[in-house]
Length: 416
RNA sequence: GUGAGUGUAGCUCAAGGGUAGAGUGCCGGUCUGUGGAACCGGUUGUUGGGGGUUCAAAUCCCCUCACUCACCCCA
Image (cartoon, rainbow, N blue to C red; front, side, top):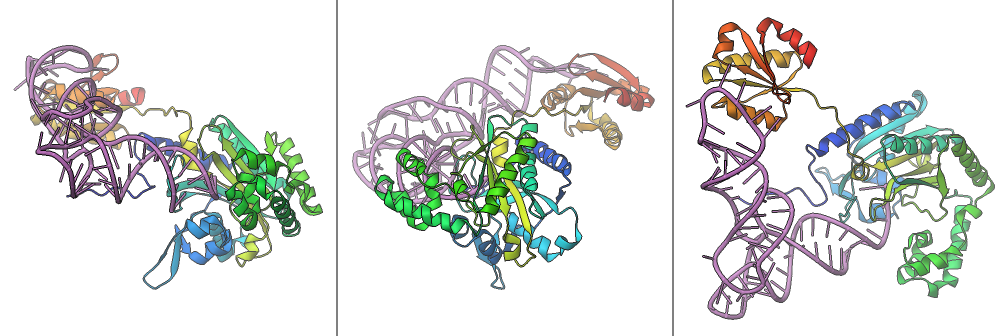
């Protein structure tokens, strides 16, 4: 029979990698509860319309990268490419925006995008993120950035930096885009073919280009930060002031462009120097219109999403406190039942115990003990069975003692 | 979607037209009440798949698939 592999861009997680994931998930939940975030779990698939309206039907993600399918009733459904639209949908659907306080959500889970896999990029990948729905104070933006930055520092991620920008709002952005487009058209000959195309379709993307000539040229183009309307400019200044108080080391990057249409005003990224081409570990921003656009009240949201694979890729080795393990060994098949009984006692006491069920001799069982890196081996032989005792061997010191069955609980308390 | 690189044992890799190999792992033995060492033996392959050239292909050619990296885009 031919074998079946996991689909392209997906993978399986098991030990020893899975321990890193469990570690990371634990840290996420405990850390963000400090800021009063509570977890939310939304469906892995949604009506396709949610993402078209939420993320923007002109975006790359919606145009080319969604796993969209029709269910048996002909509904168009899509595996979620990100979680913000879903969280907003859920908050509106359950009237949480009126009832719940504080309106702070944490999510962890798989996302799906039909992309060509490479380092730090898969078709099924995992994000955690937060969303805050509030009145739109600039301090909230700063707090969100602070919590993200500080989290990555607490899990000891090295060589990361924070980049912040403002992408303006409906008032100032359209005018700016026009100016940018005009400037790009004037310098058309100095741009690469790709950027010439972007000039018409999405001029902001020219700032992304890695071509040196394009970088030089676009340096002279108008910057969004210099063309913000009064409201956005004041807001941005207040965000920066709050970041100062929160001691976040950040850099203003007026070239930073984000791929989702819903962002307004503050946007930010945390990038890593060790990730190859996919250097963004975490990205997010504020959305003034998304909630309204999805049928909710006129309310402001801000959040971020972090790529868990990318974090795991340069997570330092996690030192997990190894749990102590006991191997239960028996001399011959006649004593096997007694060994099973002993195991049951250990399991019921919460001890990590293991026994072999078809072992021929003690030697083999000791070898298994090494493989498990068992801390102790309990030996039941004919002698022990006769005297109601257990021989206990410390696997690292090789010292062996014999205890009475009645003393077992006491021994466990002391040693495990 | 575009480009480049790589596919040989469970894993890491040799062999560049002439009998598919090594290390490691795994199983067994030396050693039936005591493990990590040592020694001895055994084990796994349609050389990713298909086609072509040739007396002969892991090796050369074509196609395809998978993986990796990069572009695009993003977490």
